[in-house]
Length: 256
Image (tube, rainbow, N blue to C red):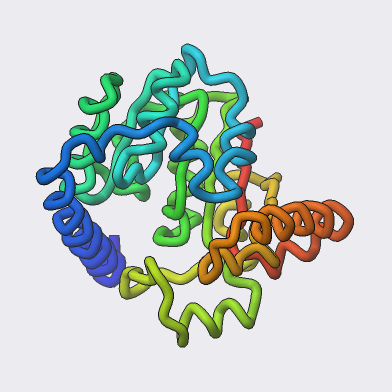
C-alpha cells in the first residue's frame, strides 16, 4: 500500500479512536445507556428500515457488520437471528461495541481490521451491512474485498452520505450543525465514485433518502418531518433522478 494511503488509514484510525474515547466516559458513568431497543436504532434515520429490508431474512445467516463503529447495528442484527461478525478500524470503537454486545446479551465476533484487506476466507458471508463507511475507502479495492468475502448470491447493503447536491455540499463545508465532525480526508460519495465499485458489482441499486426532509438536521417538528418524508417518497418514486438532491443513499450490491 502507498505511503499516502497508509497515512490516510492512520489518520482515520486516530480520529475514530479519539471519538470513541470521548464516548467511553459517558458509558462508564451510566452503563444502562449501552442498552437499547431495535426500534431506537432503526428509527434513528429514515433510510435505516428500507436499507435493512434489502438484507432479507436474517435468521441463521452469516452477516458481517462492515465498519461497525459503536456496534448498535451488529447487536440489532444478532437479535434478529444473524450469526454476526463485526470489524472496525478503531480498536476503541471495537471495545465499546463489545461492551454493548455484552450489555444486550448477544454473541458477536469482533475484530479490528481494515476494509481494504479483510481477514476472512473467500465466500464467508451471506450478507454485509455498513453505515457511513464506504466513503472513507478506496472503492475499487474495497469492492474487490467485498465481492471476495460474499457468498454467491450474497448481498451487501450500505447507507452512505451523498455528495451530488451542490447546495448541500456548500452547507457541509460552510455551516455549523450537530454531528459535523469528520475526518481530514473524507468526502460524501459522488456518482463518479461508484465506478470503483462497478468493477466488482456491475449492477448497483441506488436509492435516495432525505431530499426535502433533510431539514430534520435543523428542525425536529414531528408532523412536519412525517409530511416531508411522505412527499420525498412520492417525488422519488415519480422521478428517481431526484436522488442526486438527497442527503443519503442506500447502495445494494449483489454477488450474482
